[in-house]
Image (cartoon, rainbow, N blue to C red):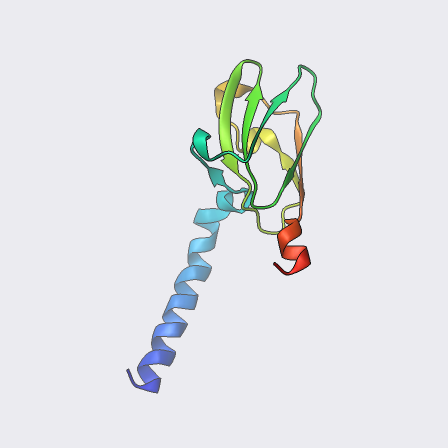
Length: 109
């Protein structure tokens, strides 16, 4: 591949990614995961106000008898509402998620 084609391809790829970002905005919170892949399980009591997780952690979350599993592969989002990622029938709107940095990234491992 010559340099002109490489520069053109790189520019098109970057431009495509920039326009795709709004459509992918929900992914900065992470993504659903399989229950068997959870690093830990957390059961939130009635009236819980917050959930502490680490970036890149997969957590099975139990709320009011319902559960879902989420991979907190976040991008610069330290706090958000659990209701933004929880299935609608879970009813977790008033719970804040606090995302700490992955300690492996801080230590350089």
